[in-house]
Length: 353
Ligand code: CP
Image (cartoon, rainbow, N blue to C red; front, side):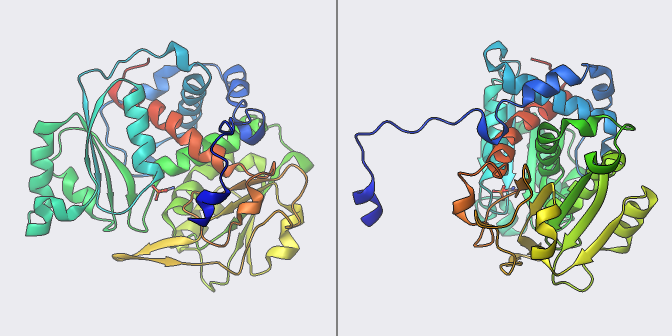
């Protein structure tokens, strides 16, 4: 009640500030990247389970297509008219489900949503294989989120329509990482210059979280290797003693990406160009919150021009006082997810609006 009393209902709602938070930056990507959709043909009619399925060229072309959708919404036709997305979320979601649904709607399609596993036959013991077999008849694509990382593979056994991984347990979240890279390229388009970056122009990236346990970071690290030449160092900031898996270490080392682990955020923060913060990890059927020790707010000592990313939902680690500062790129990240998902849907269905 008290919040309502403090709200002046006679004042028009604030408009988005387009200059702030990167809303206008997709135009730069349009100018810098030559469109070449041929690389995306390999994605046609494929399931998307892991970030490992994409190469650098496809990633950049998806970002270019996303930038086109973001900058030219008035030019959209409705190529998905008559097609149905099955949005199956057996684990809670705000951004992934709604941004996929927004993306599908913007392209003209219809949606059926499952937001609670207790409303499907799975609650009665029906197998994922049987559910997959049924979904073939009811829609044209599935987006699946499940806290069981193997669920998507179970459904893939019988699905004959494409499925996109909307987050499988603590394993991967490839489309979140697409949104992350899209935002990073908008903030630092120089990463597109594969070989020409040296010295100060290379980025120091701080990742606050536990890479081994957090699916958004797991997928992001796979994509970051495509920009290895533009990365001076990745610094993992965590209290966990063994935050990286052997595979993650091998991946970083095979790309000659310098990295280290520290517990000391204050010491690192003034030198970081990108700060990627995450605090939630799915462990079995429940989530665990990490990292409230590492709190970012408007009084944090950021480098000038630094970019803060967070896949959200946030906890107390990301203070709302940061929202109205130029360091806030996490809202642009959440907004861009719609356009990058439109790009991915277009590539899978081979419809380029
Ligand atoms: N980033 C993300 O996955 O958010 P949701 O859990 O709200 O989908």
